[in-house]
View 1 (cartoon, helix red, strand yellow):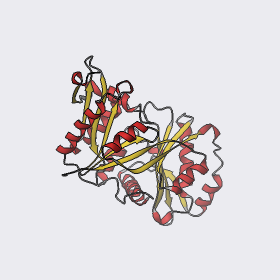
View 2 (spheres, one colour):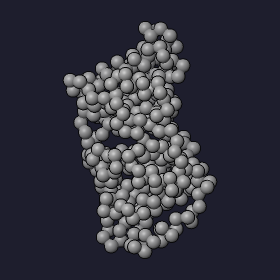
View 3 (cartoon, one colour):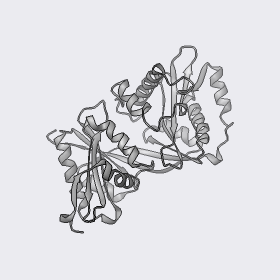
View 4 (tube, helix red, strand yellow):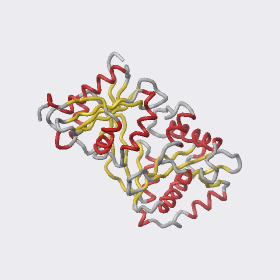
Length: 323
């Protein structure tokens, strides 16, 4: 492969997003499509998202790079993609795409750049390390076989918590109204910022950003946003979200979080059990989830539920010079 014949150019959503999504699907567990990629991309436009593609002489997309805001609460901190098609590796194309990526990073004056690499991909890890990336976090991925699930197994736990005054519901039952969404935002943000291994920064700067990124996304199912409420105080104590992404053959248990005041009371286990019950209504046999490797408590809960470990992902970060 002659690199001089490969054109690296800005990605065009209409012409290139199907190929980019297919390349993403070689590295990610959750499926991507041109439609889902475009939805996410359009939400990120005002924050500087950019994608470039490597196009062969035949017009095929054989690799791509991309940059996006990593955390809406942190200015000039970006996440990135860089994937080369399996048949076109070890010819220097990855280096060319990396140079293009760094050019975009420089234009945006990024302070840090993050990239995700499968923890089983030795060549990807080595590529990142050679370019100054260091491991920051390890995402532990897990899988549950619903065919082995006993719906009644955690009834005693649920009944005990109900007797203590906790009400289990979901966003659909609550009407998915603005007031409920704001409470969901607060619980998500505070729980995420205080989880073990967290950097202490909430993932969304405002409710409006949360509503755009979560509640207005195609994968948001109000009935799959499960909530435990303290009936005595009205406080939202715990939540667990579950969905099925378009094209997936499994459900995905997204974030599960508990207000620090209510931890240690088996509430997370209860809402996770309810999430598994909800997954059965999606007509799938498998549920997947992931955790920061430092969140030993949540990993232990899922292990007790019956989840098993699968290959995960390393989050690697590079401090940018002259940012």
